[in-house]
Image 1 (cartoon, protein in one colour):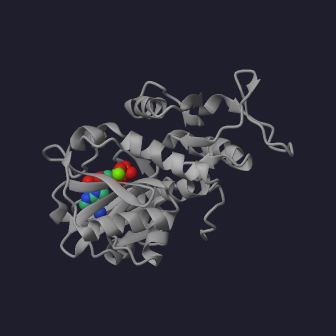
Image 2: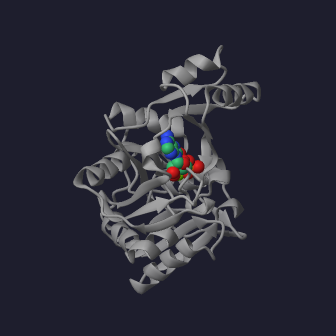
Length: 302
Ligand code: ADP
Ligand code: MG
């Protein structure tokens, strides 16, 4: 097959691994710098131009779109979809997962356990939003944050109130969430590929840090997840319409709760912690799906 990957940095571990896995299985994979693609979106023959040339018609496209370029990146991915190219993850599904509010609403509708969460833009009084989730301590999050940046633990009512008020004054949308203290700075990531968990890791934040993100100094080890966790991860990916997803869960006193579903999960942490060949699983999934021309959208609402 002839594959394309939308990525900005071809040298990243995850991107190199996908190129290796594709080549090992006899495919070619062109890494295309998302921001250097341009396109005439009104032509009835959807084309993509790159480096002065028209891109060939690929069998499948792997989107690895960074959070800072979501909008343009999804437009480029949609153009591939217009051509009927099989997207590893569809643009609309990536859009759902990038917006934490939208993702949580869809997961809640499907009955998936979540931390109690309230959404606020300009609350008349911050106390009512904080009380909505059971009072301090609370976690306050930017709706489109990533890598742990934009996630704050407010330990007292007074600090929670002043943080909510500060974001409100700056016109920034936030989520206010119940703090799952019993997770003790750790979470579990299950990597779902094509409706199956292919690897799982437990991440633990560095000392004194409640965020377990590897980018924030957290450490990963292989996780043995329960059937319930496995089932929740697969359902969460499916509710958002993602073929490949990193589903992050906290182990709470009332069972697993999903905090986030990542549509471009990093491969380094999870492959190193588990020795799983996640890149190979992804390419294997593309072989099965693209070959059967499964390019139709799943037609989920929202
Ligand atoms: P990001 O998109 O920036 O990774 P997350 O929502 O995944 O944001 O939060 C980052 C980390 O903070 C999580 O991996 C988890 O360790 C911790 N965390 C997030 N929400 C909660 C919560 N409600 N209770 C306890 N810890 C949390
Ligand atoms: Mg996260």
